[in-house]
Length: 295
Image 1 (cartoon, rainbow, N blue to C red):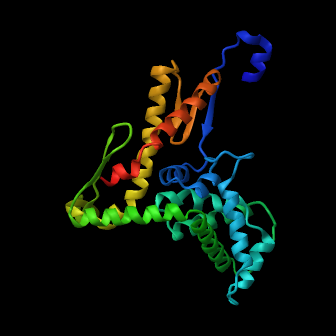
Image 2: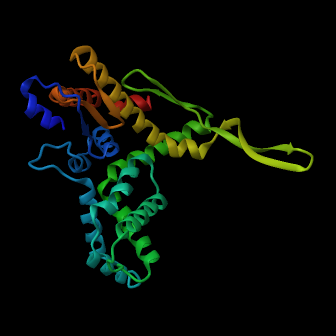
Image 3: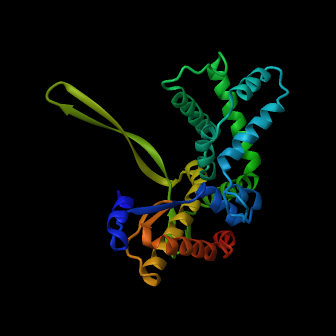
């Protein structure tokens, strides 16, 4: 409709259409920039190259290669079944998306099963294997293995974050850090204890409500599992804040739409937003952010 109005009215037409620009697997982009990881950076379009990369397709190809090397006699039949059936990028997308945020193999396998159910809706495609559960379990593990090979540097960093969290929680220290935008983040996961509230309705009916409340001490497991994703999200938020501030204060752009790593503005401002986004992110990640966080 906007395009038609432009043709009908000509250059006097004012567009109110929001044009969005999305990052490529933003969590992996952040890890790649933090760690100066060229292998991870290439798969998410941080390296200058002739054509755009697609991290999800890279993982799908690696999964098939790993299946082709399967040597366990009990698993070869599942490997051959998936090689024949094919492993599309859609099967790998959600598992890869959750990885930079401390996603687990269990969660990844759930997303693989969800992809499989959705892909079969309204179709009569043959099953990859008669034992669907075992076949999907095998596929999930191979996708996870392929992701590990692609994200070895990010895995190292996530392990380091877990070690940092263990050290801090042993000392009962609430982890805190400032993001590049100056925002103070405090990670405070308290231990919880269950308690019950008993409510009487009328003369006979009794209801028991099971709730939880905070107690003294830091919840070690939650603190350990949350530090890496919370730190990555805090950098994501800082970059968004700095980008919006730059657009408003120095570029005169007042209309902006942001959803995590998806930045939107009016069509006339897209060029300025593209350049500003790159300038802000580059300036932010040129600093030794992990060293500052450690200190």
